[in-house]
Length: 247
Picture 1 (tube, rainbow, N blue to C red):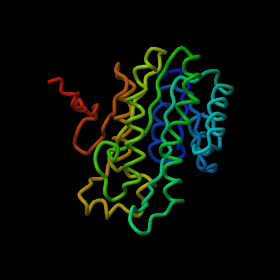
Picture 2 (cartoon, rainbow, N blue to C red; picture 1 turned 180 degrees about the vertical axis):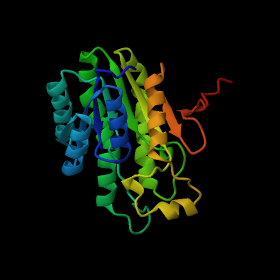
Picture 3 (cartoon, one colour; picture 1 turned 90 degrees about the vertical axis):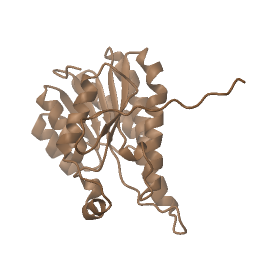
C-alpha cells in the first residue's frame, strides 16, 4: 500500500506504537489524524508530523464516528485506520474481581476496535478501498494467565478480524491484526522488570513498526501478524478446527 498522499487515522496515536506508526506513515507522505484522550501530547505529535489531532475516547462510538468524519473533512478521504488504542487491565478473575476494571479494559480494547471498524469501513469504501489494522497482541494468540481479561479482549480482536476479512475484501477493504509481544510503551510502564523476570524480552517500538509495514506490503487479508523478539514478523498460521465425523 503506497501511503504517499493517503489519509490515515490512528487511535491511541499520542504515544507508543500509535505515535511511532504515525511518524512512520507521515515519513512516507501520508496525511495523518491522531485520535486519543491525551490532548497535549496528541496535539504535539500531530504538529510535529504536519497532521491533525482530535480528542477521542474509543470506548464511545460517537467519538469514533466523529474522528472518522474529522479525518474525511480535514483531508478529503480515509484510506487507512489503525485501531491501536489499548490498556492493560490487570483485572483478577479471583475473589477480588473488579467489574469496573473489566468494563474499562473491554470498552477500550475490544469495543474500541468494533466501533472503529464500523465507523471506518464506509469511509474507506468511499475512498476506493484501503486497510484496517487493529492492534491486538501475542496475548490474543496464546494464553496469558498474568492478565486473563486482557487476553480475552485481544482474542476477541483476533476473532473479529479473521471473521470479517472475507466479506470486507469484496468491498475493497483489507483487515489485519497486529500482534506484538510486549514493547517499550506506557502500557507496560513500571512492569518491565516483572516481564523480563517472566521470560518476556521487551521489543523496541521500531520492531512493531516494521511489522506494521509488513501488513501494508501484504496482498493478504484477515491475517494476524505476530511481532516477537528475534523473528521476522509474519502471519500466525492457525490450524483448522476439526470438522464433524461422518462415519
